[in-house]
Image (tube, rainbow, N blue to C red; front, top):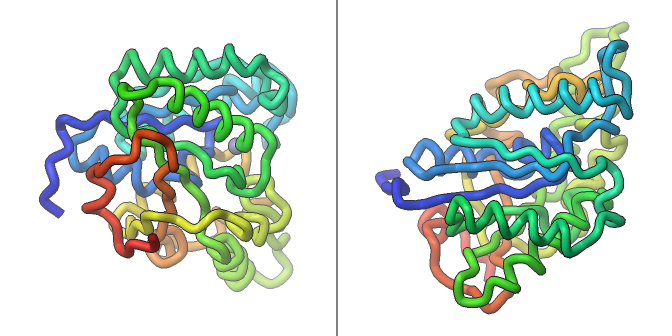
Length: 267
Ligand SMILES: [Zn+2]
């Protein structure tokens, strides 16, 4: 697609390292490849996430540091221009002062002059409380910007997509080997997207699925029992290529370049 996005600034706002890749990796890589300045803001270092490293156990500062390096590597794979990593406590975002989080979000939007913001939809991909809180704080922060607000899009996972990843991974597990049990630490692949609101923008990002997969694989600390390492790269356009976005029903509705990227118009 010959779309020049060199005037565009896209900001993805998520809770933990790895969310950017699983929620929106295709779109972030695509828009970066089309020339947009693409930045990811992670509200936590994800220090409570799973761990494969005995020197960086869950809950440790060391795991937060490890995950920040994994995010840097994923950012390179996606072609991101910058990563902002805050130190809010992983697992506690619903209880962090809401005004503080909203200010943090607004500060970055204003500083980089983001015109398109992407965050979780209200289902938080799979009802993770930190993700749901991020959805709520970003929505409030953007709504408060009035006429200066960027367009806000909510990302969700197509229902069944992570079940297909798990099935493929199980098919590819060698007899006698330990079968995968999770997707990035989530036990139930059907939790992803099962109750997500309908998207307004269904994007075929399959051309960037290999980059998305490469970025996902950078988050190694989260993949001890994960299905993702078991799928093959050739499967990724089909398994990871479709992404769902919903334009936030705020007072900022407007046409953006996402309208030109979309595959179908659901509403
Ligand atoms: Zn997360």
